[in-house]
Length: 299
Image 1 (cartoon, one colour):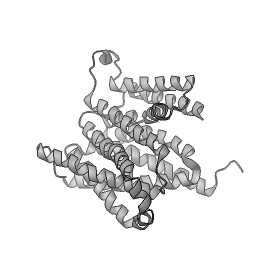
Image 2 (cartoon, rainbow, N blue to C red):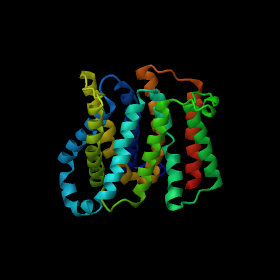
Image 3 (tube, rainbow, N blue to C red):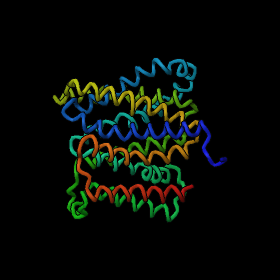
Image 4 (cartoon, one colour):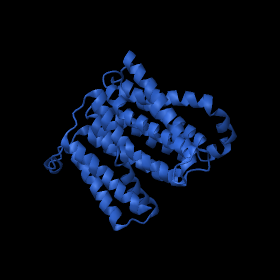
């Protein structure tokens, strides 16, 4: 009986599954938003909604930690701008050019980019078997980007949307690596600072979209998509992840992130009716297998 998880830990695992399910569904929401509202406006409305929710639920904690938050505002602003605003913008733009299945699988490579980023920034030791894991995951990424035909890589015939997702994943990995030296703030206050930075930086991004004539006001369906991405992938998922980390620690919580590409693939096929090809299955196996090898020997 001692091997069974405690009730708090079991609750944390449930929160983590719901969190990664929400993040996987975000890829589906990105694809569904095409034609319903413009991608940069979606980013702005997403972080505006989160900003408003946090002013209600986190204002007391933010006020209590304001001196520390203000002292580290420059770093937090850059992290929020790149990790939240630019990452989401690239994902929503990419959805115009690629499948939600691809978006989900390619996001699965983020842990590998984090591993490489930690080595570049902090010279974190990387073992030979971890390099093998990196190589296996990168083959999976290349398989998706080339649609199962590696000849396209040599000819640089890559899907524009897939390339944008890879760039977005690199940026998010950089944000994740920077969390290693995060300011001494509670998770809620840190999230509030990051979300505020994402909201502020998304204003000129949406402004650019308006100036070039690409801004599309949400349809009725578009507003439902906005409500979903604000409440689930952005607000509840982030809060749930913070609570789960407090219960089981970042190491065990981080393993659950590998469920995101699986949920994204399943939901894309079930909800959007997207085709799931053999190269998708092989790529998913390579991405998750490479991560498993790298993570196992890292610990």
